[in-house]
Length: 139
Image 1 (tube, rainbow, N blue to C red):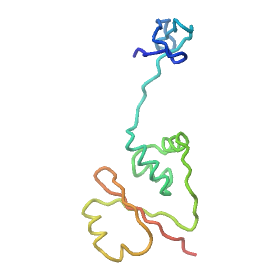
Image 2: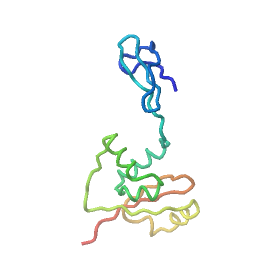
Image 3: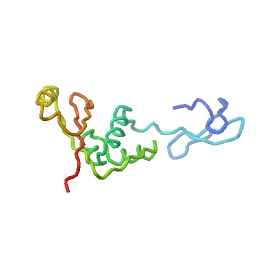
Image 4: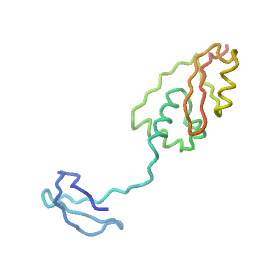
């Protein structure tokens, strides 16, 4: 992959300058800066990044998010650090969650006793839905 511009001065004028660690090296003609092309690496869809951060803010742990989305808990930790996400800590409530299909979700909301009490959030997870409910800790 050939770069479009020098990362140091943004000049489009550069030449090949050897190979380092099996990667092509370039030299900028304007600032004499040596650089290599960044690896592309594996990218995770932004949908999963947004869902992971949303679930983190809702109070789920890194490992719970890993089990739900199938994304490494280390990746979730890195995204929390990268985007500087701060979760408000309130020890009197804790989230409980259920993964439901569309028909199960209809049945759940069809029963009046499920709608009473703490607030709920429903979010999409591919072809399923996640229902998050906050409950007070019992003393």
